[in-house]
Image (cartoon, rainbow, N blue to C red; front, side, top):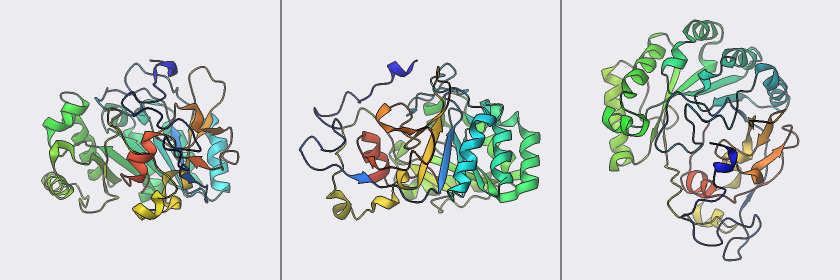
Length: 318
């Protein structure tokens, strides 16, 4: 897959939606999020992954290198700039971040500055390859390093339906290894997966964690994050300026008010900054070559802005 293969607009959307960054299809002023103080810098470590999920918003797979591996040297200036701007956390996402062999070096850079580091991982073989370096980082920096493990459901059958047959067992093994070795570990699941409501899902995860002696509080919305689906086949409403008061939401609570993500696209000489973790491909959300350049307003001109952030109320960071 190439960047040209990534559709700029999901085909299921009603005509005219998410076309104009200023106005909705109905001619109403589109909601815009002003930048606030930078809290979280995200680094996309590359779109390559050891598995291919059915509904991966970024189309990660063992063959997709549309976003290539950035090096630790390339990320160092962004991490330093984030620190200077007051950010307290750097998150690493992919793809599977541990396929990037320089991830431990990037983590050491972040943690050595006194910042927190968060890694979103499937906890499978690529993570286990780095066990010794992870143990050293945990010993030196403790709970400032958090690993969030993707478990789409508390049951193997539904998890494997999304992530591939046989994927649940190694993911659980990796999560258990993290727990046994005292890592700060969180879990990410899918809201409404299998038709269950949130209470039923959290109860199911609680049973799973208890069974495997994993010290995660399933009632904690940060320790167990349940993310809404980002299905491009479902039409979603556009967000207008009036929606903030109607939905009782605040623009400064949106992910793009306090975070940015750095990506390196295949064929590009240098990384660039994009508005958020969900929109690495759409050129309208490319913000510049530095975090300072990227500190400008973001028009909510994409279905993910509505479905995931405003209506779903989700955030990739805690």
